[in-house]
Amino acid sequence: PVGQIEQLRWNASSEEVRAILEGTDWLVFTSKHGVHAFVHCLTEKYLDIRSAAGAKFAVVGTKTREALFSYGIRADYVAKGQSGESLARELHDTILREDSKSIRCVYISAEQPAFDMGEVLSSVCDYRQIALYKNRELSFTICVENYDGIFFTSASAVRRVCPRLSDL
Image (spheres, rainbow, N blue to C red):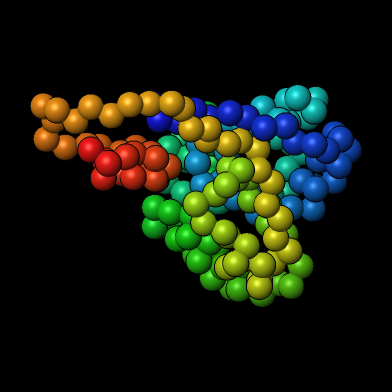
Protein backbone atom coordinates (compact mmCIF):
# COMPACT_ATOMS: atom_id res chain seq x y z
CA PRO A 1 0.00 0.00 0.00
CA VAL A 2 1.21 3.49 -0.87
CA GLY A 3 -1.79 5.41 0.47
CA GLN A 4 -4.53 5.27 3.05
CA ILE A 5 -7.97 6.90 2.96
CA GLU A 6 -8.80 9.06 5.94
CA GLN A 7 -12.17 10.69 6.48
CA LEU A 8 -12.27 14.39 7.23
CA ARG A 9 -14.74 16.23 9.43
CA TRP A 10 -17.41 18.38 7.82
CA ASN A 11 -16.98 21.55 9.86
CA ALA A 12 -20.60 22.60 9.71
CA SER A 13 -23.47 22.21 12.11
CA SER A 14 -26.31 19.79 11.42
CA GLU A 15 -28.52 22.74 10.49
CA GLU A 16 -25.93 24.09 8.04
CA VAL A 17 -25.49 20.66 6.42
CA ARG A 18 -29.25 20.23 6.14
CA ALA A 19 -29.60 23.70 4.56
CA ILE A 20 -26.89 22.93 1.98
CA LEU A 21 -28.40 19.58 1.05
CA GLU A 22 -32.03 20.69 0.94
CA GLY A 23 -31.31 23.08 -1.91
CA THR A 24 -28.96 20.80 -3.84
CA ASP A 25 -30.00 19.56 -7.28
CA TRP A 26 -26.96 17.33 -7.95
CA LEU A 27 -24.67 15.51 -5.51
CA VAL A 28 -21.50 14.49 -7.37
CA PHE A 29 -19.13 11.66 -6.40
CA THR A 30 -15.97 10.54 -8.16
CA SER A 31 -15.05 7.69 -5.82
CA LYS A 32 -16.51 5.17 -3.43
CA HIS A 33 -14.50 6.87 -0.68
CA GLY A 34 -16.50 10.05 -1.18
CA VAL A 35 -19.76 8.13 -0.90
CA HIS A 36 -18.71 6.41 2.34
CA ALA A 37 -17.32 9.64 3.82
CA PHE A 38 -20.53 11.50 2.94
CA VAL A 39 -22.79 8.97 4.63
CA HIS A 40 -20.44 8.81 7.63
CA CYS A 41 -20.54 12.60 7.99
CA LEU A 42 -24.33 12.62 7.81
CA THR A 43 -24.43 10.01 10.55
CA GLU A 44 -22.07 12.07 12.71
CA LYS A 45 -24.47 15.01 12.36
CA TYR A 46 -27.46 12.81 13.32
CA LEU A 47 -28.78 13.13 9.77
CA ASP A 48 -29.46 10.60 7.05
CA ILE A 49 -29.87 10.55 3.30
CA ARG A 50 -33.37 12.04 3.57
CA SER A 51 -31.58 15.38 4.07
CA ALA A 52 -30.74 15.23 0.35
CA ALA A 53 -34.16 13.98 -0.72
CA GLY A 54 -34.51 16.34 -3.70
CA ALA A 55 -31.02 15.80 -5.10
CA LYS A 56 -29.97 13.69 -8.05
CA PHE A 57 -26.77 11.67 -7.73
CA ALA A 58 -24.01 11.68 -10.36
CA VAL A 59 -21.07 9.26 -10.16
CA VAL A 60 -17.99 8.02 -11.97
CA GLY A 61 -17.63 4.28 -12.47
CA THR A 62 -19.09 1.03 -11.28
CA LYS A 63 -17.45 1.00 -7.84
CA THR A 64 -18.83 4.44 -6.98
CA ARG A 65 -22.28 3.47 -8.25
CA GLU A 66 -22.15 0.26 -6.17
CA ALA A 67 -21.03 2.15 -3.05
CA LEU A 68 -23.99 4.49 -3.44
CA PHE A 69 -26.35 1.56 -3.98
CA SER A 70 -25.03 -0.13 -0.80
CA TYR A 71 -26.86 2.67 1.04
CA GLY A 72 -30.03 2.10 -0.98
CA ILE A 73 -29.43 4.99 -3.39
CA ARG A 74 -29.50 4.58 -7.15
CA ALA A 75 -27.28 6.89 -9.18
CA ASP A 76 -29.26 9.15 -11.49
CA TYR A 77 -26.27 9.60 -13.77
CA VAL A 78 -23.20 7.41 -14.31
CA ALA A 79 -20.49 9.03 -16.42
CA LYS A 80 -19.68 7.35 -19.71
CA GLY A 81 -16.02 8.26 -19.18
CA GLN A 82 -13.99 6.94 -16.26
CA SER A 83 -12.70 10.17 -14.74
CA GLY A 84 -13.82 13.20 -12.80
CA GLU A 85 -13.11 15.31 -15.86
CA SER A 86 -15.46 13.17 -17.97
CA LEU A 87 -18.19 13.42 -15.36
CA ALA A 88 -17.79 17.19 -15.11
CA ARG A 89 -18.07 17.66 -18.89
CA GLU A 90 -21.03 15.28 -19.20
CA LEU A 91 -22.83 16.86 -16.24
CA HIS A 92 -22.13 20.31 -17.70
CA ASP A 93 -24.00 19.31 -20.86
CA THR A 94 -26.82 17.71 -18.85
CA ILE A 95 -27.31 20.88 -16.80
CA LEU A 96 -27.35 23.00 -19.95
CA ARG A 97 -30.19 20.83 -21.28
CA GLU A 98 -32.12 21.40 -18.03
CA ASP A 99 -32.18 25.08 -19.05
CA SER A 100 -32.18 26.45 -15.54
CA LYS A 101 -29.98 29.15 -14.06
CA SER A 102 -30.57 28.04 -10.48
CA ILE A 103 -29.10 24.51 -10.50
CA ARG A 104 -27.00 23.75 -7.41
CA CYS A 105 -24.26 21.10 -7.49
CA VAL A 106 -22.29 19.82 -4.53
CA TYR A 107 -19.16 17.79 -5.28
CA ILE A 108 -18.11 15.51 -2.42
CA SER A 109 -14.39 15.24 -3.01
CA ALA A 110 -10.98 14.32 -1.76
CA GLU A 111 -8.95 17.01 -0.06
CA GLN A 112 -6.86 17.30 -3.24
CA PRO A 113 -8.93 15.99 -6.14
CA ALA A 114 -7.15 15.01 -9.35
CA PHE A 115 -9.38 17.36 -11.38
CA ASP A 116 -10.96 20.72 -10.52
CA MET A 117 -14.62 20.22 -11.43
CA GLY A 118 -15.34 23.82 -10.63
CA GLU A 119 -13.50 24.90 -13.79
CA VAL A 120 -16.17 23.13 -15.85
CA LEU A 121 -19.30 23.27 -13.71
CA SER A 122 -19.22 26.75 -12.17
CA SER A 123 -20.24 28.31 -15.50
CA VAL A 124 -23.58 26.43 -15.56
CA CYS A 125 -24.52 26.03 -11.90
CA ASP A 126 -24.05 27.19 -8.35
CA TYR A 127 -21.08 24.93 -7.62
CA ARG A 128 -19.72 23.91 -4.24
CA GLN A 129 -16.96 21.45 -3.39
CA ILE A 130 -16.82 19.78 0.02
CA ALA A 131 -13.72 17.73 0.84
CA LEU A 132 -14.66 14.84 3.13
CA TYR A 133 -11.67 12.52 2.78
CA LYS A 134 -8.00 12.52 1.94
CA ASN A 135 -5.61 9.99 0.51
CA ARG A 136 -2.63 10.11 2.86
CA GLU A 137 0.69 8.85 1.56
CA LEU A 138 2.19 5.93 3.47
CA SER A 139 5.85 5.18 3.77
CA PHE A 140 6.91 2.43 1.34
CA THR A 141 9.90 0.89 -0.37
CA ILE A 142 10.13 -0.45 -3.89
CA CYS A 143 11.81 -3.70 -4.81
CA VAL A 144 11.39 -4.43 -8.52
CA GLU A 145 13.62 -7.49 -8.76
CA ASN A 146 11.88 -10.54 -10.29
CA TYR A 147 8.88 -8.55 -11.51
CA ASP A 148 7.86 -7.95 -15.10
CA GLY A 149 5.18 -5.32 -14.58
CA ILE A 150 3.34 -3.06 -12.18
CA PHE A 151 -0.42 -2.65 -11.75
CA PHE A 152 -1.72 0.61 -10.37
CA THR A 153 -5.10 0.90 -8.70
CA SER A 154 -5.31 4.69 -8.62
CA ALA A 155 -3.84 7.84 -10.07
CA SER A 156 -2.39 8.72 -6.66
CA ALA A 157 -0.45 5.45 -6.63
CA VAL A 158 1.05 6.34 -10.02
CA ARG A 159 2.06 9.80 -8.74
CA ARG A 160 3.71 8.25 -5.70
CA VAL A 161 5.48 5.29 -7.27
CA CYS A 162 6.69 6.46 -10.70
CA PRO A 163 9.10 9.13 -9.45
CA ARG A 164 10.78 6.53 -7.28
CA LEU A 165 11.18 4.10 -10.18
CA SER A 166 13.38 6.57 -12.05
CA ASP A 167 15.75 6.55 -9.05
CA LEU A 168 16.33 2.77 -9.24
